[in-house]
Amino acid sequence: MTKVIMHGCNGKMGQVISGLIAEDTEIEIAAGVDMRDSGQNPYPVFSTIGECDVEADVVIDFSNAAAVDGLLDYCAAKKIPCVLCTTGLSGEQLAKVEETAKQTAILKSANMSLGINLLMKLLKEAASVLANSGYDIEIVEKHHNQKVDAPSGTAIALADSINEEMGNAYEYIYDRSQRREKRAKKELGISAVRGGTIVGEHDVIFAGTDEVITFSHTAYSKAIFGKGAVQAAKFLKGKPAGMYDMSDVIGGN
Image (cartoon, rainbow, N blue to C red; front, side, top):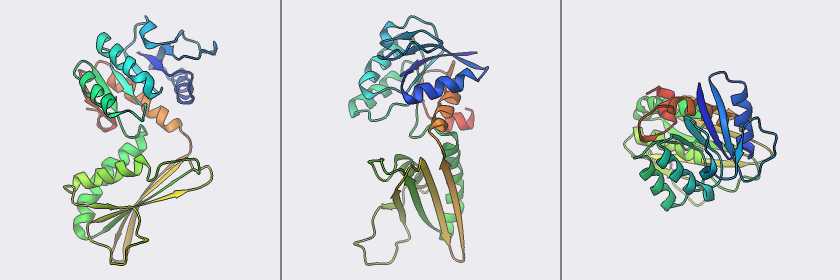
């Protein structure tokens, strides 16, 4: 049984994960941490991670950047692994994540979805065959009309997985409206669509002569990120200090 401290337990993702874990016989939440306590959680809730005196195997973090420094200090002192899902960390905080990973296991990934991370693995294999055979590569991502950044971090992560496989030979092109020239062979186009309530869609297109191969991923709810975090917590239990990501979970290393 994996025992978890849910850091940010009363946030949207914290509650999603609480629900997922409640139905999983291999993992349980031993305690939660949140400044707001609804009193409805079936586990004790502490206002700060420093106040938590409950033993656990791993922390799952879906909180906010302001709470991450205290969390990292706690994990380093207790030598407790952490699945770090909070985004928007500063450069200083990212450096602190790396330092903390010298003391305990830290898993941080651009996207917690198991499907997206499996897709990244498949894209590496596809690129090694298709890109070397002259196929052009384009990524089209679609999200809801409230998303403020474009392209999505996931689209960039997908592009990076391809580019790393190909020796970083590709240039990312985000807008062709001012370009009056043929597509370069080493372009990797990334286009963003914003509208409605689309949770997230990503298409990776390999376009060759007389055929097109498309890899697609569609997210119907944010629960997919919670499921990935739960799997990551199970994986991280008992792991030695170091930096991990979801590719390690997929590979089972």
